[in-house]
Length: 256
Length: 203
Image (cartoon, rainbow over all chains, first blue to last red; front, side, top):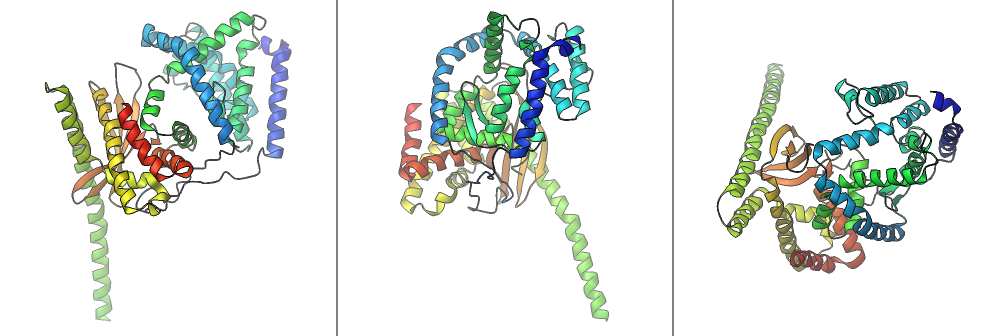
């Protein structure tokens, strides 16, 4: 906790977080309800009328350009090392890398838990971080999970949602992909608030570059195959992906 | 008065019968459905593991696919509201193109099922003789994580037909409808039919 108390940047981050949350709650990001552009009236026999997929994409033209850009960046810059990582590194080691990276994020979960007034989230993440960093050897092994402390990653988007911010329009973020205004903004805060930025390495730009590069590649590796399937099964990849994104976002079991 | 009592009795008895028989028949159908899913999976695996030539295998897998998937229904669903606007001739063309597209995309995926662990997790009745069968699939070759794949299955004339594949809570046909609608709204139905055809030639 000493680091927390002494570090001005963390304080600044927390204050910034609370302020934006309040701001977003007050102005409510976007006044309009997302439109429902799906028509399920073909036959009442299936896909119940109650199924409401709210897709709101007013910046489609722009998004499509970013999508194209991302595909090129992915093909030439991100995918080659990710494919190598996928082939060379055995599954068990990948698991270790994943646990290590996600352990470093636990302090952020503690803070988000506090902002959301959810002490159980904070305690869960606090103990996970403590146990995994020590007994789990710097977080390489997720020992806490075995002890019943389940991983639950929070994002700043969740915080905004908790305080009533609406999703806002669909956006394709450069490199990071599908999102919406709320969660996209949250993602920026997540990256900026990553504890790695504040502790010890905060002035080591080279280290930070390697860290972010590695996280990106690790994250990308998880989706190898999925992107190929997407382009195989769809005619308009952008539209199909957008629909999949909203299906996932709108939660489970909506199709029933 | 007697009549009323008789009538009440009858209503009561028939109600009780309906209540008793209804869940029974669903339970029975559920058992049949589990049989259907297991049989289909077994058929697919036996074809993949057989010593036939690849083209023979593909033909057999295609037959299994066409017999167990409600392709026409899926095609119409994927059209969404444009189904009402399409002419008969276009519809015929579209149905053929869609069928080829679906077979081409999914039958080749079957070979990936070689050596997977596969468990039926649950069978849920929804409505109108439709069920959702949830399965967990593990392909040890690629990952150590289970993937959840559910099938929406309709019972028709004592036959089961798959109408949707829901992978990790993402419905295939909802995605397809969005995909196709995007193309129809921008370029028209002819363009959709053409693109379905082009997709075949590419692979």
